[in-house]
Image 1 (cartoon, rainbow, N blue to C red):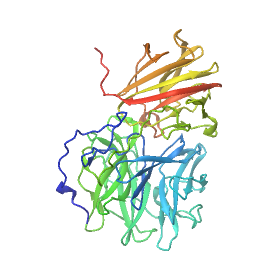
Image 2 (cartoon, helix red, strand yellow):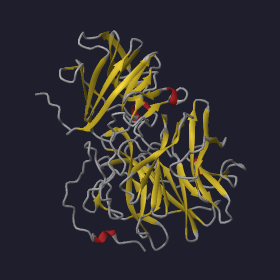
Image 3 (cartoon, rainbow, N blue to C red):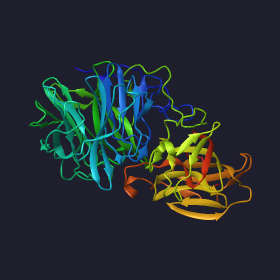
Image 4 (cartoon, helix red, strand yellow):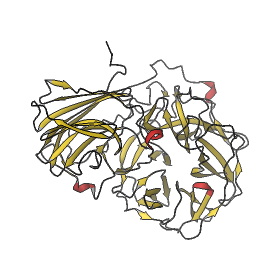
Length: 520
């Protein structure tokens, strides 16, 4: 039996319903025995969580970002710190991974989508911090692989649409045909969802049963689209019995804090009594931030199923364990003094090895300019999870390059500002327009961009003392998947286009109090 969370054995929260880190970023751990979702803010979708002893590891979809498959570590399921990426090169759009520990080795299984089609891949490492192997192509389609082991020690992958396929003993190749073993749970026809979309299988063994969690309903679209569904079987091949408590998780109304909740992993808590679901959802009004990682307590029933423990993900929830003395506080600002690329940075769909795109020189990041504009230059991006923030970059260009700062969704949808030797480069809705550059701006300049609840304002300066406000301001609430597809998020980004070099002297990020802008 699990702990009775309904007893409220902890005092009511005394702190405000939010807590801020060193740059103002929101922290899940409220510091008073409670946490407030998200546990990972920003675009951290399709979470796969692994417990090894007293440690938790988590990986999420990285899509077109390289480095990708960033691994996180926690002791309490709420405070997370980045470990490092497991994928160092572009292999397609990478999503819905499964992090596995089997016979002393770590594996990550993941689908990779290219224009030619979908395949599934695996990387492996003897230690969680690597080094990780090069990706191995399993040469099998479908998406969302979920690893499982039979009582005889035989390894399998579950895939989308209810399929299973056998793996070799080393887990690095497929050794047999696909088999359809599950049809999913049929939700009421009148429910408003995106599509059936049976995907995201996660398998665990408990007692006499294998339990399978799957996602249904589609991962975006209407706010009530997504859900977590459970089934169980005494064998991996079935028959699979659906839970009478389905769906375990679902957004039921557009008035809720979190939309399209789904794609869950079930994990035992630190006290080895309470269990939790880790899954993703869109924040109401902020699809542009992407799907964020959420944590919800669940309880085992007398008849061997799970159901919600009764806490709303939009309210403070008791911590799974005593929180860290200092919650992990990951800075996004960068002075580039470390001599290596920070874990916050990734290139968007880079053409070739990323090691050829940058180097370090006297506390500066030197970017090799590429492409003709932000549309094709593979900008350097970072994920943030705040509704209002300011980002400032100090840049130096040569006569063959252009550089600036963006809010970047994809090559067709971005907004920002930059300069070349001769021009001011204005970016709006993915269009790029060049104007004569102001006389005050030379090769060395600073650009500041403010995103205040989707309202964007940009300033530029030659010396950080005299600032000029750009003549246009923008509204970017529609820069998200339901508009442009791709399952991505709107991210601060640096672009360096042309054929020369761009030196980045500093990047500063801070959260601002939302609603700073006024028409008065």
